[in-house]
Length: 469
Image (cartoon, rainbow, N blue to C red; front, top):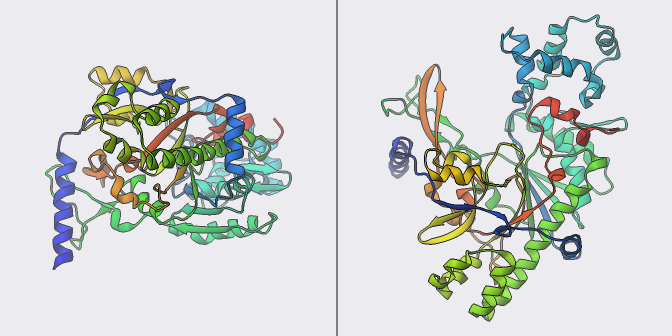
């Protein structure tokens, strides 16, 4: 009976959240270099890199990787479906440069020859690529789609993250991927192959998003949507649900990066050094933080704050010593930020809540687009590429329960179509948004070369993904 009561309480809560007015956040200012985003000289960067490389810390890579790859091929699906909106230029570019894609090496030679001589029916060829009559690329998770070639080898993102991770970490790292369990056997085979090719085998773990975190959905009349057996239909509640997976991880330093943010192996040094930099900063900040708390003085905190830009100087007089200690004695996240060049995604902002302004990663949808808050969004200079180094330890070395540090008010409203009808539900606070609200947050400007996501298959034609360009 208690389980039923808990479920009913959760349904009532989620219904109330799904239909209440959206709670936009109070943005004070975008973070910029010199005001919330740190920027280091080459010598400083090298010092931080060495701090990490000589630390002896165990490294874990946490890589959310359950996303489907079908969106990468959207223009090809539109072509197959005779959609009038299909982009002819994209299709032509894809075909004309087909041999530059890593997965071209998986195509039989006779088919490649027919394509080169224009003796193939284009619709049949694309169907072969996308569907289960051939490579089935359109139905795979993004992490299983071949991205890069290294000589005769073809690597998927699941494999490339291993190859790059062992280069980044000074000691043998652990890798943790969150996956779609439907493809678990294929993913494990990919990793078995790469583990047999690298010098030292690494430990690889998998987890799935907990189905218990899925959201209940409601119709326009605010009624619970159920199936034919009157069982509630539920939907995944966003990447914030992965906080539980992250909370269970070990590792002195945990790196978070997206599955599709990779570079060709030959062009990865900037990315390697960027993650090492972020980790070195996290280690250094923790050391200084612990010294500060053990013998706290306002003068020493002001110097610490000036160096790392944690709180606004204009507000320090209104914040007590006890509040300051609570704010800095938290898990540390050092987040790379790249200059805004029109890419989608959240960004770094100063957010005010309960009278204190702190640095947070905010999504565009969390900002009111109809008042002066929107001008702050327009004036932002950097965005979040999801490159982070985490250190989960208090001043005594004890781990935090990360689930206790969430700003639960930062849930998202979602409206979707379910069998032709509008449905409404909520997603949990984003993993690096409200999910990490109560963290000691540091933003660092990093090179744009460390951010090369693959959102469409044509992105793989960029030089950063090509072996010989």
